Image (cartoon, rainbow, N blue to C red; front, side, top):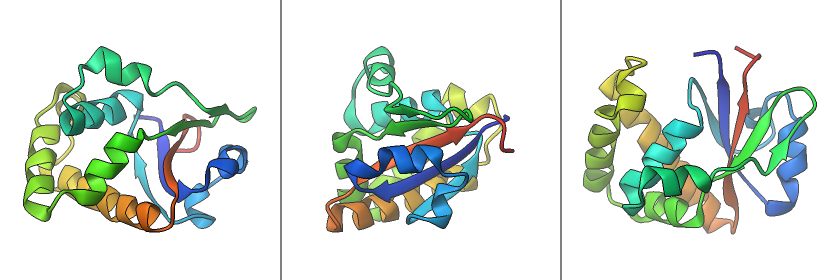
Length: 144
């Protein structure tokens, strides 16, 4: 899919700077992946919280939209907290369930790639939590 995604740990007052950045992972601690969209973030939210998809997707309205096309979302506190506190076995289960969802299967994500994503997100959530930061998702449809 034609979306470049950076997920970064940052302060609340850095949202605009994240949105205007051409590559947030160069400026903040984070991870970069291709093809992670709002539906995939909401699906992870559902697996971690038990919320229904429609409720979860509503939690991911953009917090910033840049003129250049980048969109910034804020990962819900509850999702960040769950990622930061689940042990490796629980994260493995979440990754397995996530890989089996329609959002990831349709784009033929490899189970190992989904597991690596979940583990990287958990590490980033722990870092953000330790620094009193939040997780933000920067998505750009053109920078692929």
